[in-house]
Length: 417
Image (cartoon, rainbow, N blue to C red):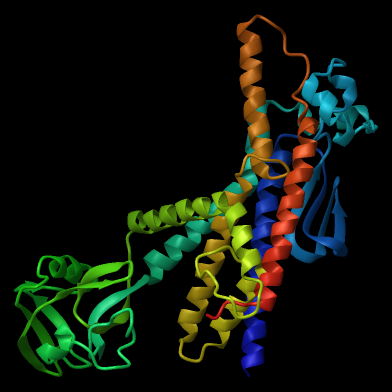
């Protein structure tokens, strides 16, 4: 039975990833066709083609490896016939890696080429893919945080911790200094209703009151069964490693708290910033991942993870017997939301072959056109994006290397969820 659950978790991830990729490519396809560009292929996945069908100019298909996708537009790189014959230093140095064969285009295709578009149209086409992932993230964020709510600590005590944890005794395996809640006589099942005379409904109400009461004898109101009690408690400051926080010594029940759209989108903003920070650290993440390949070596829970690691996580969620079906589905959707956030941020990196590289090219062309206009010159030729081909090769090799390292690490030394 666990095997079936694990497989269902993997299938959810693969299906969710395929849909996300399909919508990403649709974000490119739709404006490209609206602007009259000839699109010859729309593919989800890489490798051997499993299914394809041609409609109009475009072949639509699904490939065997659902780890990406692409659309193929006519004239993504300007042919040499429309470019300047004069080469600058960069062009001379990189000419060995640039496309050299002239693609034969019919007059009709020439008019429907991507490179012929104005920069703002190019920008819309190339931003359409990442925008689709951002839109998916926004929708899932609103559904999860506004519709169902996010788990927060409530005010019902699940367990009273007997002692004050220390670095030498973090789990209270040996009896140490009694915790404030144990001294106060609190019990599992108690519901905290007030603190220092102020009503509290959730942890966010209680937390700021604790900070003001460290070291002070304070009243705490609890509901035990049908009986309302008032106990005396003295919160302490827990100092253990990098942890410095007010401490009562209770483990509280998790409750779902619905958020308004502003709060929900604020959570999404935090996630976007965190993902961007993680991507900036990819070089160091690759080194860390390489050091974690040895079986049993410590894993960074906040580090980069491969599709294999995500599949393991999805399988663990699906097979978790302590979670309700609703919590499993919502957790899987949250993972899909995080994946789309990563797809958006990653694709906005201004390097080819990523969408951000083509967006940067469109912005550069727009600026260059304006400069030419201010100088009274007529714009005669498009920006040669083919000059970035060497960079594309370099980035592709880096991404492939990072992917291989992460996959091997997640297979040999998987995260323990």
